[in-house]
Image 1 (cartoon, rainbow, N blue to C red):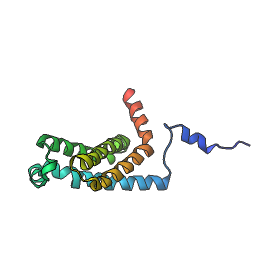
Image 2: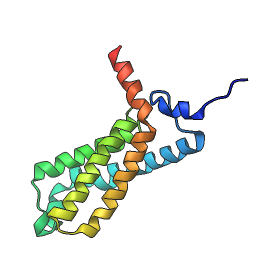
Image 3: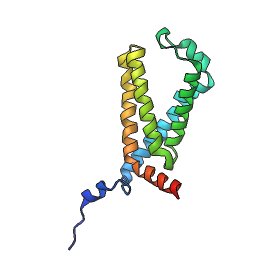
Image 4: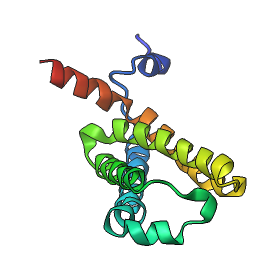
Length: 145
C-alpha cells in the first residue's frame, strides 16, 4: 500500500494548482480588482489627467507624463489580471505598484493613514501572484520553445 504525501505537491511549484473553491475566489478577486484598476483607477488617469492634476493637493503634484504612465500601467495590470496566462505577472506588478503608492501616500503626501488601502491591495496581489505562480513557469516554457 502506498501513501500519498500531500506535502510533496507543495514543494513542486511548477505543478501546483489551487483547488476549485480557491480558484473561484481567486478569479472573482482578479476580475473585480481588474475592473477596478481599468475603470476606476487607471482609466481616469488616461481620460481626464488634467482634471486629476487640478484636484490634487499641493504637496502631491506629479508631472503629467508620470500620471499617464501610471494610468497605462494600472490599465495593463487590470487587463493582465483577467488573462489566465498573465495573471501572476500582472498581480506581481500591481503588488509592486501598490506598495509604491502606499509609500507615496505615507511619505510624500504625508498621509500615512491613506497608505493602508494600497498595502491591503499589495497583500492581495501578492497572494494572487503566489497562487498563480504556475502560470509564470507555463509562460516561460511556452516562450522558450
